[in-house]
Amino acid sequence: MDVFPAENEDGGYDRALPAEESDKDDDDDGGDLCRICRSPEGPNDPLRYPCACRGSIKYVHQECLRL
Image 1 (cartoon, one colour):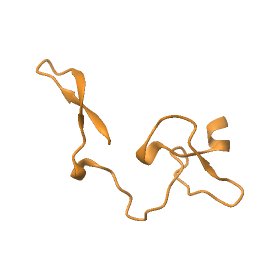
Image 2 (tube, one colour):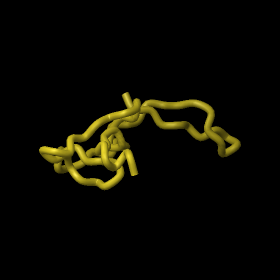
Image 3 (cartoon, one colour):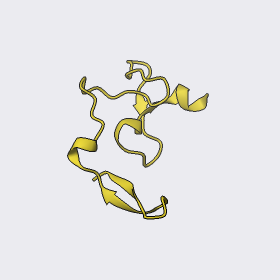
């Protein structure tokens, strides 16, 4: 389940609420892309997920991570 911060009355953020289905950023092409170079994985350049990030920022090429 995706969560996004909820703005409080002071304009700050102090808790998280579940994302609505319409708020999700779904790619129409259905393919995973590197969050840095926005390219798909290749035969010699697989996509990795080195952290707990989810959704469209989950994947990164090993070489892009080194830059």
